[in-house]
Image 1 (cartoon, rainbow, N blue to C red):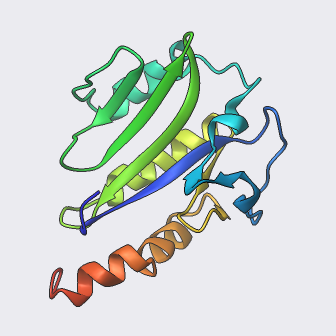
Image 2: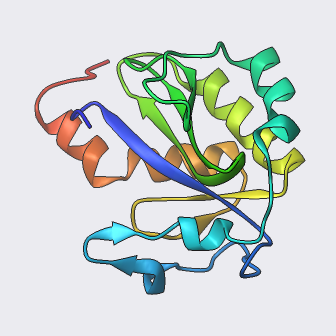
Image 3: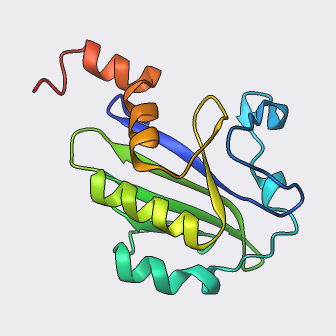
Length: 155
């Protein structure tokens, strides 16, 4: 990940565990890796269930595996879905600070609302599905602050 990008996880509200806004998921952090696949166990959400919405809103990007779907641009803003046996095993999205991400972020929030999904930041906090709160989280992140400290993004 570049200094001008930040990633967020997307997890189901219900699956192996029932999750809610404000919860911290540090118990799923092991060996410097967030085990978000554990949260997708038993959710049984297939790509077919969500693909139509995503294709209408975000162009399908280039993928290097049949187990990986990309919506958006690998150099810009994108949503990444990892599949196992046709079901979602992991989902995340990345925001690029150097381009306008407002429309993309609103699409992601709406997508999460419709599909009963939650957004998790780098501190593993589940965020409310609110544009301003997620934008503030992004702009207060270590990654964004580092990006700004290098003299980037001056208005």
